[in-house]
Length: 427
Ligand code: C5P
Image 1: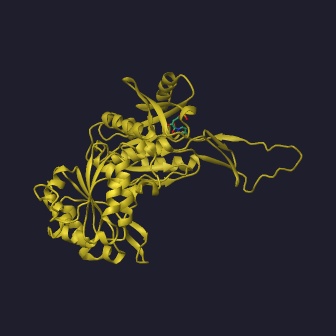
Image 2: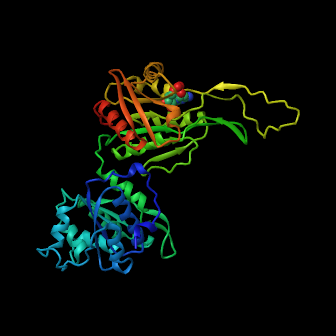
């Protein structure tokens, strides 16, 4: 039987090889969330990792080692007395090969064992025996809300974090026991995002990044409006990449149907005026501003309070427009943006969606907006798509980022921005 054929495929093709070359120990302790570990295992394998599953006796009550073997493509380890390794030391061998040990689900009891340095079965033994500098430990807690809130659990979580474990968050919602609250394990896709973020270098650690993304919508009346073509995919990918690179990220998003990248603070807006207000408010705390939004240049001078009716005479409504504020130019005029490249300055990045003459148009727009970096792309070739190609124009000249997924381009752009930032200043 092909077990992998039964599961949905939530990953875009661009995530395919993000963990290529990584070897992970995936540990399962006992909890109803073990069913999510099955899909998580498959996503890790799809992302290019090799996965060695290790289960506690309790985890085997919730899901079988056979299922995890089918999904990981490797025999599963449960017992510390497993005689398969030639030296009979599974706890040493498995932990020495791993780039990280990820325990999902990590039960309250398992976390308590770790906090005490206990080693009563293979999984906690392996965690204790691992070389902490080479094989970091990630924990995805999963438990009932009362267990999660209990002072003993919170004390143990603080202890394991202090001992070097990287503790992932929990979700809020319905629990297997029928109660509702904090303590659910993150979903498989969220865990994958966390693991990828964990392995990403952190050139933006300590920086705050503000991103605008998507279109704006300018109401004509309660049922109509004008907008721009923009899926928001590029801006969302940039927000995700900036967060993975260690930044605290605020994403001001126009009306798009995209999920919020993990760890990103999202502010939803509709109109250009809303987006302008949100961007100006958050720019005060930001170190980098990246304007990817396709802001409508004009809005109806006055939105009708009620739906404008077609009266059958063939008469069309006379619409008058007024210009919207230029968000990027206004942020770039702030004193902290003007002080670039002084330390502590706000670094502004604009986007230009052109249909031709990318270099000349991008250079002209960079000068007109007064920003240090302008990123050009050919709009009609990329609207709504998962791929793009970018041209970075700054004072030194132009740099091409050739056609790739928006995800890959976002990571490259974030690295390029990090390289250009002035040395971080204590605040
Ligand atoms: O002015 P134009 O739309 O050609 O410039 C594009 C750049 O300016 C993008 O970075 C876009 O997000 C930003 N922009 C803005 N506010 C506007 C218009 C564009 O922030 N009103």
